[in-house]
Amino acid sequence: MTPTLVIVPGLGDSGPEHWQTLWTEKFGAARVRQDDPEAPTAEAWATRLQEVVEATPGELVLVGHSCGVLTIVHWARLYGGNERVRGAMLVSPTDAEQANMGELAPAVLPLAPVPLAPLPFPALVVASENDPYVSFERAETFADAWEAAFITAGEVGHINVASGHGEWEDGEILLSEALHAWTPPEITRFRA
Image 1 (spheres, rainbow, N blue to C red):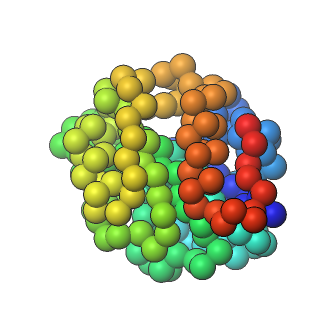
Image 2 (tube, rainbow, N blue to C red):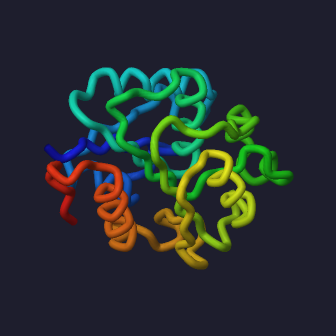
Image 3 (cartoon, rainbow, N blue to C red):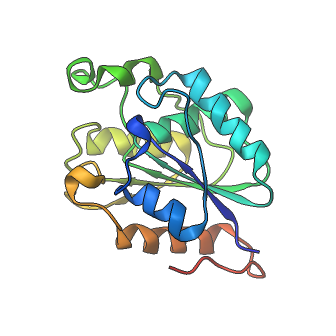
């Protein structure tokens, strides 16, 4: 059986044209919907992720973007993960500790400090080399701390609608490759 994707959006719940929303519909994914998608806190957002994980049967793969990545790492810190989570694709992790974040996106500040403990499941960090919300070096530091694989997406901004990422076919390829690595051979693989 193919693992169920759990989409973990960032600020604003990743709007209707965002690749996370398109993937939710395309792949029948579960989705984390926060009570207030404009005002994250580590505890509230992690708790909502825990509720979705508990309510979604079978093997799971988490797909976070931006503050959704921080939600996943705070969830792992607070809840210790879940044995049904086969892996996590962590795209454009926002750096809540970045010096100019108070001016750039002050709503992100309550997600600091960013947990830097190894994750209890395999993960892939996908980072842009010119993301305004995280330096490429800091994204690599996160990946190292989380014991995650790390890949560059090139100079592609924040990997969101504003940077030209709607469908994000390259992301589907990365997800398919990650699923292949994270699931046993007898599991039917996700097909883009």
